[in-house]
Image (cartoon, rainbow, N blue to C red; front, side, top):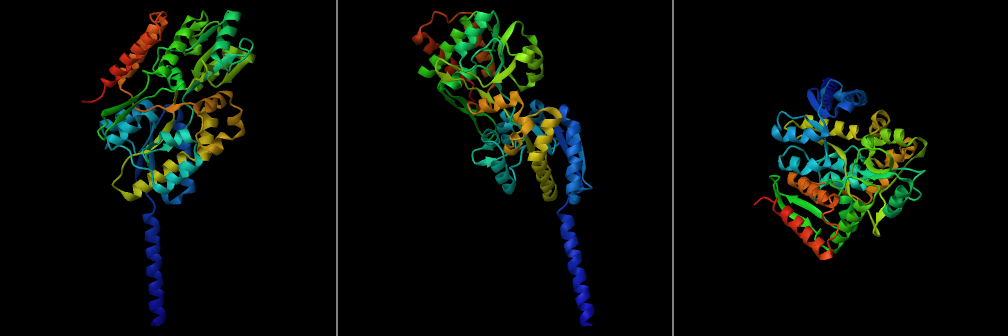
Length: 401
């Protein structure tokens, strides 16, 4: 009888362990939104994840093509109908947090993210001390492509322009864009950021354009426009007679075709004695809040896997997206990628793009148009300071009242 009781007890314990193991898994459905370019890649990686984690072998994963620029808007519009995992750009984070559309990263995963990814990408997924997403890439920003038979020294804008002028070639940069324009202002030491509340409303502004540094930046833009080599633009596919251009990784293939054997890249140059800066951009993977703990655990496990060193490197090899993972960045193929190497160097001087009001972009375009149109050519420092005071005052008017 004693042996029978022991056997029954052992069976009960075994059944309990099996039930516990099953509870750790998830066999329901997950929905993922990623850019169309990586739908097939993501499907392959999901299958690899399920093979590595048998507890999720019966999980159904539906992958839909929704770009990083649209995912946040779609999530905020209808959180319940949104994806369980979704890729988005860093400037959408505050909107998602305010809408309750993104879950905090599981604490142990957050520690891994901090240890394994570059500081810029880690900063981009944080709001205060809280991490809300998993970094996927560190590859959205701009730097210099140039013809090395034309440009003798890419380290200063003054020399680049002199070389282009001497060769009868053009230097392209889109200075009437609020994105590219920050290369001057942020590089000179200025700040322009907005704070939002829990409802996503813009409630504060941190600005120092109307300053000695801001005037220095604006004067550098004016000097650039005065060069006969200058052409306003940022797409090498639309450029002609080109010696150099400020552009991004998305145009690397086109740049190689245009420059051929003379293809070269570099971080942005200095100008007027300061290092040009700008915005840095990152793609990240968010997890929607869940009511089912097992489903949430599955989402976190899959998100961590899809942003791991191995998968980031595989994604680079498949579609060329630059990794944020520090070890993946050290990979020989990544290191040999001239465009990514130049961007990595430039990102050290950039700030992650946060949330900006839509009207900011139009305002920045208007400022750039005034520079390009020569309206500020004869303005002295005092007059330029007044222009920048007006710029800041208009930005402050965008805040929620």
